[in-house]
Amino acid sequence: MAQLWGGRFTKETDQFVYSFNASISFDKRLLRQDIQGSKAHVRMLAEAGILTEQERDRILTGLESIFLDVKEGRLMITDEYEDIHSFVEANLIARIGEPGKKLHTGRSRNDQVALDMRLYVREELAEVKMLLLALMRVLHRLMKENLNTYMPGFTHLQKAQPVTFAHHVGAYMEMFKRDYARLTDIYERMNYCPLGAGALAGTTYPLKRERTAELLDFYGPTLNSMDSVSDRDYIIESLSAFSIIMMHLSRFSEEVILWNSNEYQFIELDDAYSTGSSIMPQKKNPDIAELVRGKTGRVYGALQAMLTTMKGIPLAYNKDMQEDKEWTFDAVDTVKGCLTLFTGMLDTMTLRKQQMEASAKKGFTNATDAADYLVNHGVPFRDAHGIVGQLVLHCIEKNIALDDLTLEEFQAVCPAFEADIYDAISLETCVGKRNTIGGPGQVAMQEVVAQNESFLDQERKKYESFNK
Ligand code: ARG
Image (cartoon, rainbow, N blue to C red; front, side, top):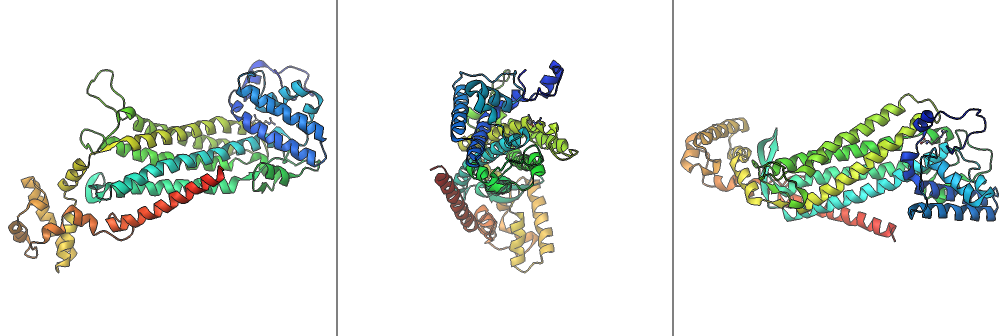
């Protein structure tokens, strides 16, 4: 057992207690962030005159060599260390001797781990945003290509009014735009540096917290040392935003599964994104969509677990908070994996446009428009509703669509119908006339597509300038 705190103890820790307490098996994932934070810390310590420049340089070289050795497989992170912070410090001292013992000056593992997690979450927010952008680019393409692909719009999963595939997919585009904005908001709120908060009450060393914050690209230092070591709001906010992303992906998955079913046949998933059955040779299953839908539960679980873990913790740091890591790591992996696969699945699926259009024609999705037609010919809406209802009943009996009625049949129920009724209730008219912004009409949709295009361009440029 290599631990940092043996001094005041007279007995060895019980082995099971030691393993129960240890976090190395999962926080080894924070090696890069831990070293990044330590490097900034020693640079600041040297600038503040707390370390000499030689000490700083030896520590920096030592830290870099540890990172490289782990990365290249020469050094293993093993369970003999309590956590990643102990691992780095013990190895540093083993490598460079005395100066290594000064790394932890003016720092506690409490502010250290608070920093590591912030660095980790901050990076992952940016990664998830990139994946959302990739998904939105596919949605944008599908929208541009399908302004005239008619399909039924549903309420209560009953055919309601005709829309286009572009309009339907456009609804998800809006959801993912909000998700994207949520992640930006979280980033803006969390991007402050907790290092220098010490165990809970700051330190007596003349640390330059603003400088550490600057070295690590934070907007500035956090403003209360007790809050700094015990704040996990940004984790809960991220898990909450990830949960909402998963909820959106799950709803979309459900639609993909329906559309891909034998009954709908609106789309066909690519072979690369489907799986077969071990017994039924005819099967091609939408497993990826089902898994994305299913994995939503894991991310909701992580959010619930963290809210519960945090709810009764008095200030300041308590070991309960060590529980933040596994949930966060799992949720990040899940949401990133789901976004990646879902994007590939959408990008490669085939649309069966004729099937969608035929379905839109079959379910009386133009009944509202037939009623509106009567209103435009002087019939009050409530009466018009009743008249079209009668016609629908007649059509159901004859197993035909409204468009298939003869003019005589229309006029037998209401003389206000004229020959232009057919044009008035065609799919093209029903959709094409709905052009108030947000509607499925092509003019309205083109405006939205143009707005999405500039949003996507603007965000892509931000990433390009950031990665230069
Ligand atoms: N492994 C701990 C965590 O993840 C690091 C902080 C430990 N601090 C302490 N005082 N025991 O939260």
